[in-house]
Amino acid sequence: MGHRAHEGLETAAWGGLSLLVAVGWFATARGLAFRWGLGEAAGGIGVATAATLVVVLWSWRSRDRQLEALAGGACPRCGGAIASQHEHGQRGRRGIEWWECASCGYARSESLTCERCAA
Image: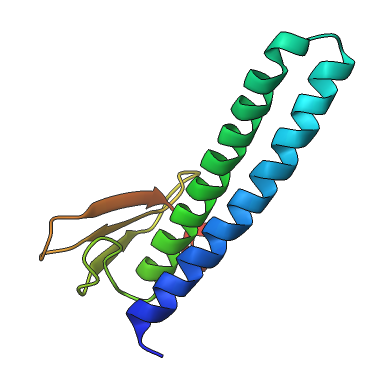
């Protein structure tokens, strides 16, 4: 199976899981809202809960994908090679790592302490 096909399958699986979880939380939040006497607002509370959950799951997965790509030396945006640099922290400062892609202009920096930074 090709990389793109695997990525598409993984995205579909995460989408399906998110939808299943969102439906469960919608039903739970709606039922609790009815029980608490918020009958007219129950549907809205259920939708808000489900939407919040989908956004949280999507953001977690998005961050995981970015970190996986960066760890593999690939740009999360275009898939090209990415250059990384690390500046060691000194005297109580944390180290910093940054990545730049010459192909698409993607740039990211993150506070990251390595073994040498901690010494």
